[in-house]
Image (tube, rainbow, N blue to C red):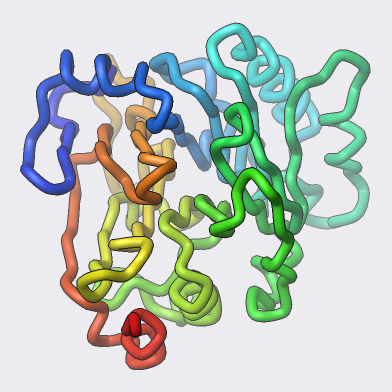
Length: 289
């Protein structure tokens, strides 16, 4: 599933057994989410494991290439036999950089017979009603207007709210990204205030990795994960002959009943944090009565 050197992690107990991971993925309370991002036309170099939901967090094209967009769209649609749902959001490279409105991405992903969910500041309940996703548009990312989003849509089968927020740009990670380097502080605030268990994105290739911020005892969710799943190697890293210039996909086993991440696979970098002390606004939000 993952290339040598990547990390399969039981988030409570450390390195995991792959057979156990495969067994757990068959449980009804587990949704397996396979996440890729920033492929920039290299999608066909990826080796994807099976799962429930396949997600792309933007920059499937390079510099607004229509040929890239259509090649990715056709490849992504071809994965339908392996996943119940295909979900994609746009990044900054998925548009004509000189004429940002020249490409109608919604039309590109809405051809007859398409089963791809292209989200632009929209909610999606998928995986048989078990998983609630919100996908931010590139416009929201570009304007850093996450605090203006309507994240309150209710659904009787998923009353606890959003499980997974997709954003091409990552939230601000203390010690890892900065607002100067496009880590969004407003996105981090929204995630903590709305108690969203997972945020997946990319954009900053050098910041690929995962961090878990743990909540106070008794809170639900028990933790929030920031995951950067950028697939293409950053320019500072020399590709190896057998990797095609891409990292392995990120695989998340998410317990929908407990609203927590059970397994993470695909990283050679993994961080854990206790209660997010750098976020004074978040600590108060996470104190449960």
